[in-house]
Image 1: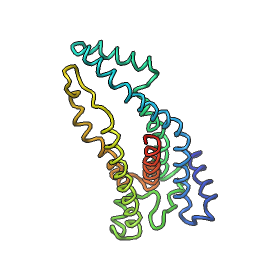
Image 2: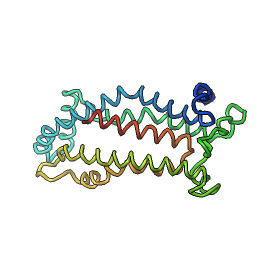
Image 3: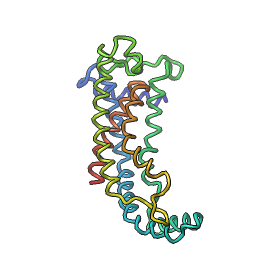
Amino acid sequence: MSVFASLVDHLADLLQPLFGASAAAAAIVLFTALVRLLVHPLSRAAARGQKARTELQPRIAELRRRHAGNPEKLQRAVLALHEEEKVSPLSGCLPSLCQVPAFFLLYHLFSSPSIGGEANALLSHRLLAAPLGGRWADALGAGGPFGGAGLVYAVLFAVVTAVAAFGYRLTRRTMADRPMPTVGDGEPVPGLGAVTKVMPFMSFFTLVTVAVVPLAAALYVVTSAAWSAVERAVLYR
């Protein structure tokens, strides 16, 4: 973790002339953009996989009709079809999974009072009036929702809400264009309807994350969510 702390410090030093006291916050945004840039090839592969899986839906529906009474045989047939077409059912998860270590590094870095036996100097950095190691609850306790730190969070919540609303519309449009999988009698897969209704709202759960994690980790989440929204709009158009 000390190596990662040094990386954030060096990025903050480079950005100091442009962003002053908020240089560390800008460094986190830049770090997030670099992570997303590295993960972008996986995102492109996930988009191609999604389009391929959509194209396979009529054939999968036929397999469900043919093997409606034999779930094990149906599962083997679906897996064989994915293997034949070189489509991975898990490819869409890889971009998110690859970002988990970076998020938790930031979370622990800005939650730890000491690093390598020394005081964590990164906790002294701020985004305007809000300390990067603080949380929304700290901002509310210090000056209320309209205090300096509270207003920083208000802006972050506004950005996340706008991005989530965009993601909601994009997810609804994508799911509307995708055929609903059915079982042998033509009925939708049990439970899938409920998942379909809930999935567009998943973007709004980011608001909860921003509210409970340190501000540095919240910046990572907000930047990554904005990147994802733009990326999805381009890749899934």
